[in-house]
Image 1 (cartoon, rainbow, N blue to C red):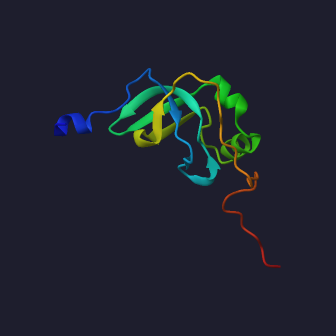
Image 2: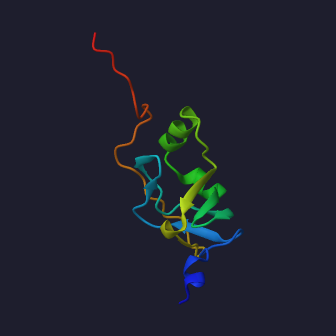
Length: 113
């Protein structure tokens, strides 16, 4: 494999992808993304902007949506490194769900009085 081939993006805009099992959200390691499916919208070097499928958005744990809406982060799209993605074979969704997630702020301030 040449150096040029090694640096070429694995996916291109329009590809259907699935997040590999065990992958967590970039800014929140409690939130599992394994099994999430979507379409690559944009590629920048080795990162892909993924637009999640409607089936994925309907299937994810409601706490995920609450956290991202509360923290003013996008929920319908996400930038992920391509090495955590694989081609979506079109099989039924099997989304990983976190065991102990809640909607409390990640950096909650607790007054000591």
